[in-house]
Length: 202
Image 1: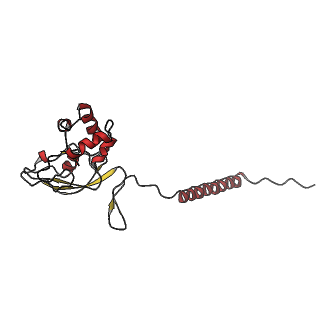
Image 2 (image 1 turned 30 degrees about the horizontal axis):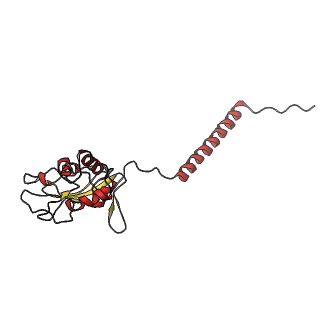
Image 3 (image 1 turned 90 degrees about the vertical axis):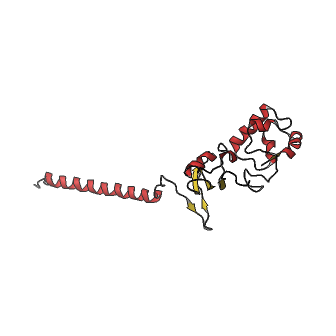
């Protein structure tokens, strides 16, 4: 009569169990590494300025570059938030010098990417016509980008309500690039614009 096979000792079963666990752990680890390779590296948290092939520097989304010159402590190129105003650019440049003519600049206006800001010294000649915020000597037209409410109300057919809308549009959209941009202001049409053309500039 043949006797039944003797079962393996408990120690051998324990070794088999540990071996299976090691194999399973290696499989899980390999899968995790494979997924990581497929996903690629994580994006960096901080963004930096990127230089294009032509050597120009592109501002990261949500930022703008401005060049500050003139009567400031540290003239140079600065990166500011998209909703920055001229006062922020001056502050970034270390503030103004004692010779700065603050009456010649509008510290409250919104900035645009790529803009050059010149803070003049007291007694300096006005900027050439066509420069942002500048006018030719003897030009008495109202600058749409720097005029306050009182100055705008001095224009024909512009009352307090329209003056406020012009300022509000300027604060929301930045500088007027041309006189025709007034058509985007609620309440100003072609006929009213025609009567304003000779008295305003940008």
